[in-house]
Image (cartoon, rainbow, N blue to C red; front, side, top):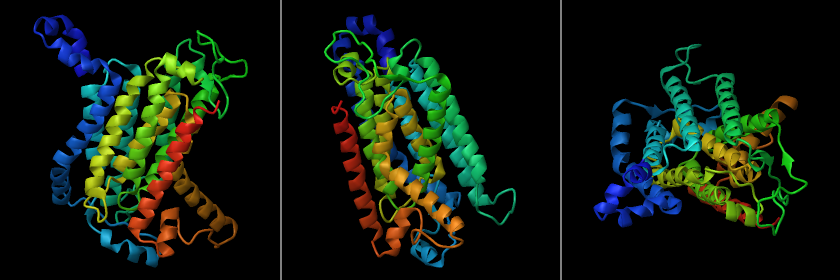
Length: 389
C-alpha cells in the first residue's frame, strides 16, 4: 500500500522534497526485509495482549492422545492458550498490505489462501474446544475428510488461478526438475530449452492441489512441540524469499536457467512478513510456551509456503526446503499404514516422529533445535542446487 501511495503521489512528494527519501520503497529488497522487521514488531507489541485475551476467553489446549505415556509427557502444556495463529496471520496480512504492491494479482492470491486457511484452522480449533457436532464431549475438531476436502479445494483454486495468471508465458507453466534447464544457456533472449516440460492445465492444477493439501497438513502435524513449527517456518520463509527474488527477475532467472514469472518477486514481501512473524512468535512459543499457534496458524503457513512454490515454479525445491514438515507428515502416514496392515505393530514408538524421539529420552529443546538444524541444512541444499543446472 505504501508502495502504491508513493506511485500515486510521485510528483507531489518530489515538489515537497520527500521523493528522494521515500523512493527506497520502489526497491523490493528493501520492502521485503522491512516486512521482516515490521511483522516481528507487530507480533512483539500485540503478543502479550493476545495471550491475555485468549486466557480470558479460556481458549486453552487440553490435547488428549491415545497413549498414557505421551499424555504424561505433554501434561505440562495443559491450559496453555491456543489459536495464537490469529496473531501470526494478522501480522502477515497487515504487513503485506502495508509494504507489498496491493494491485499485484499474486499478492491477492496468496492473501486469499492465508485468510481462507486461517478461517478453516480457526473453525477446527474452536470445535476442539467446544465439542463437535457428533459428540458434545468430544474434542476432535473438524473431521479428517472435511479438513482434507477444504485443503484440496483451496489447492485446486490456487492451481487454477496460478495457471490463468501465467498468461502466454510457457516458462511459468513449466515443470522444474533437478538439473533440468528452463532456458538455453548463453543467449541474450530467454529461449526455452528443448527438453523443458510444459504442463497442461489439468496436471498443473493437480500438482498444485496435492502440494497445497500436503504442505498445509505437514506444517499442522509438525506443530507439536514448543517452537518447532514457527522456527522451521521462519527458515523456510527466508529460503523462499530467495526463490521469489530469482523468479521475479528476468536477468537472474535467465542466468540461473530458472523459470521467469513476471510479478512473482512481489511475493518476497509476503515471505519476509512470514519470517518476521514467526520470529516474533518464537518469543512467546519458545519452551515453555506461553501460547500455541494451533491450526489457525499452521494451516495458513503451510498453504502459503506451497502457494509460493507453485507460483515461482519451484515445487521440487519447496519440498526440499519443507523437508522436515514432510518427514513429520510421512511418519504419521507410515505409522498408521503399518498399524493397519500388520494388525497392531508400530513402525515408530509414536508419531509424528518428534514424539518418537521424546520416547527415546531426548528433551523437547534438543528435538526442536536439532530439527531446526536439519531445516537449515535442507534450505541451504535447495539454494545451492539452483546453480547445478
